[in-house]
Image 1 (cartoon, rainbow, N blue to C red):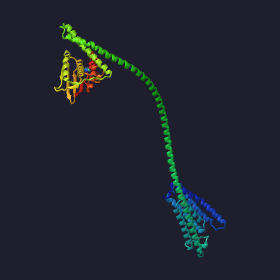
Image 2 (cartoon, protein in one colour):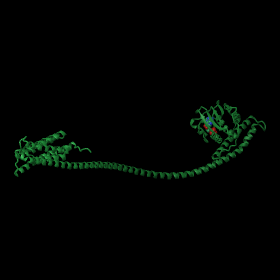
Image 3 (cartoon, rainbow, N blue to C red):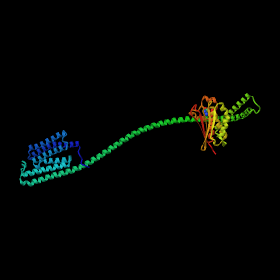
Image 4 (cartoon, rainbow, N blue to C red):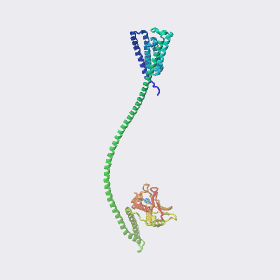
Amino acid sequence: MGPVRLTRPEKKAALMQSIWATYLLVPLLWLVLAALKTLGYELDLGRESLYMGSALVAAAAANYCLARDWLVDQLFYYLYSAALSLIVAAAIYQTGNMVSPFVWIGLIIVIYDVIAYSPVKGISEALFFVAVIWVAALAELQKLIPGHPLLPELQTVANFKYVMLMLISNTLLFGVITYAVVYISERLRRERIKALLSAQENARAYRATVSVMEDLESAHGQLKDQIKELDQSRRETLRLLHDVQQAKAAADQQSAETAKLYEQLKSVDKMKTEFLSLISHELRTPITPILGYSSVFLGEQYGSLPPEYKKGAAIIKKESEHLMAIINSIIDVARLERGISLELTKEPVSLSRILAELVAAMMPQFEERQLKVGIDLPPDFPTVMADADKLRRLLTNLLGNALNFTPKGGSVVVRGAQKGDHLELSVSDSGIGIARENLEKIFGKFYQVDSSYTRQVGGVGLGLAIAKEIVEAHGGKIWAESEGLGHGTTIKIILPIGV
Ligand code: ADP
């Protein structure tokens, strides 16, 4: 810890005190001198007043400088102190050395400066005063300066011992008092520093506590806000919960009703499916002989027929076949709806042969619509393990659609290729095409693209749904491709060859 340095205002305050002390001391001293004189001391009050006046003038000058803010600087401060010390020292000499009351003024100045400024200043002043006393006394003894008029005995050698005694006792007085004051003031200064430090510490701790308190207060405020928000959101949540509960109750009620309706619908639907299946099977029975006899008539097995009858028989046969196909489709759908999967009877099947037979059988219809038909299969197109009847139905449906949805003069091509352990088959036509958004939908049950062409063609929208079921039952895939309306359609199939 370095020495405690006074700040400018502190220095100014200390100086002010010192000057006030001078103002008070000098008149006080004058009063003391006056009292001593009345008590019989031989004093020249006129001369003493002169010195005291000088001290007062010095104090007034210092005060003026202080008012102008001059004396605060170190140099002026020391100049002031030196001037005051000189005046006092001169007074000590002039008033008669050690017996002079000015010795006590010197001591007071030393004490004051040690306490108010620094031990160094006080000690140096003490040394200065002692030196002045010694020099003055010795100079008087040696008659180097005129002796004090009031103390003629000092000039005699007989008093030499007495003078020396006084000088030593004065020196001891200055020494002891200066030492005591320096010691006490140092102790006090240390205590002050300690107190200052602990005060600083306390202040720091206080500031830290205050800042923690402020933080706590702001955190408390924030917490209060948050609690308020939480409370609000809790209330909102409760309200929402209540609404949700109400909505849930309503939904529960509705879903119970829906479930009831659904059960009713399901049983009605089941009845409908059973009815459909029953009716279809029943319908198939009478159609079989109609088909058989119309074929017999057409074959003229019971004798030749006039052309009108033959034409009638052909119409009966064609429409019966159509009816049979519809009934078969309905039976399939009824089966599908009851969740019964297709039963496959697998055997090695030659798709080239089935295709050739189908195309041959449908040739009159293709010709009637002036459509070119082509089958483009490699010669080594392999047989597949599959259900022949089902594949025949699949291809019938695809060729039938190509036939129905390709305007006159168009073309239909069936292509095939082997790709590893599966076959790729496609039926392409140059017909009306399918919009992109319908490419998947057409495989749904009873789905028909809404167009005047479809309405003209008829059908029930089951052909592709059945085709898909057949392909998937064989572990294959089926999808449609089209460049858009008017740009033809290709139905593609992938079928595993199987073993
Ligand atoms: P449908 O028995 O009515 O032909 P499908 O399931 O076979 O039923 O076909 C569904 C619909 O898909 C058809 O109504 C038709 O609109 C469309 N479609 C099927 N094949 C073709 C095709 N080759 N070209 C254009 N549209 C087709």
